[in-house]
Amino acid sequence: MNIALIIAGGSGNRMGQDIPKQFIHVDNCPVIVHTMLAFQRHPDITAVAVVCLGGWETVLSSYAHQYNVSKLRWIFAGGINGQESISNGIYGLKKNGVKKDDLVLIHDAVRPLVSQSIISSNIAICKQYGYAITGIQCREAILESDDGFCSVTSIPRDKLIRTQTPQTFRLENIINVHEQAKSKGIINSVSSCTLLAELGGYEMHIVPGEERNIKITTTEDLEIFKVLRQTSKEDWLK
Ligand SMILES: C[C@](O)(CO)[C@H](O)COP(=O)(O)O
Image (tube, rainbow, N blue to C red; front, side):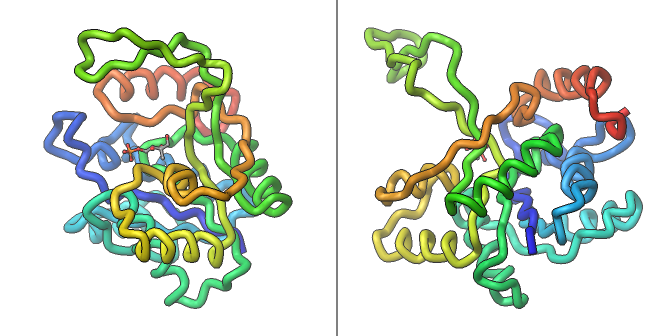
C-alpha cells in the first residue's frame, strides 16, 4: 500500500486569520481538500490519512464527505509540533494495521499543488533507495543573519536544496527514525528530513520538486495559489 499522510496539525499563526490556513477556502474548496484530492487522483495512492488540528476533526470529516474524498481512511490527533504530529500519524498507521513495508508519503496539508509526477517519483525513488525527499535546487544567493536585519556571511548556494513535501518512507523505517529521536531526546525537528539529518547516517535521495508546489504560509501565498491553479497544466485543477 502507498499511503498519503497529510500533516494538518498546525494552527497557522503566520497567516493571521481566524481559520487555520489549511481550512481556508480557495475557489469554493478548503485548501486541505485540494491537497487530499491531489493524492486521491493518483492511481497508486491506496489511502489517505490526515493528522488534524484538535477540534477540527468533525469539520474535516464532513468536508471529505462533501467533496467525495473517498480515499480518506484515518484521522489522527495533531501534536504540539511537526515532529509530534508526524509521530502521531505513523504510530496511528501502525496501530491500524498498516504493514511495515508499506510506503508513507508524508505531506504538508498546505501544499495543494503537489503534482501527480512528484507523487509518482516519490513512490519510485522510495522503492528503489528507501528514503525519498522532494527538493529543489536553490537559485537565490543566501545570506546568514542572526536578527534578520544585518548579515556578514553568505552561504554558497551550489549545494543547497530547498526541501518540499512529500517526504516518503517505508513505515518501519520512519518509525525506527522516531524511536531513535525519542531515545536521543530530539523533540522539535522541523521535518522528517531534518530529523534524519540530525540523527545522521541516512542517504536521502532527492526527488525533483517544483516551484509551483508551494507551501501556503501567508495571505500572499493564498493569492499565488489562486493564480497557479488557473494556469495549471493539470486539467482537473480548473
Ligand atoms: C516539511 C517542509 O514543508 C519542508 O519544506 C517544512 O519544513 C514544513 O514546515 P512547517 O514548519 O510545517 O511550516
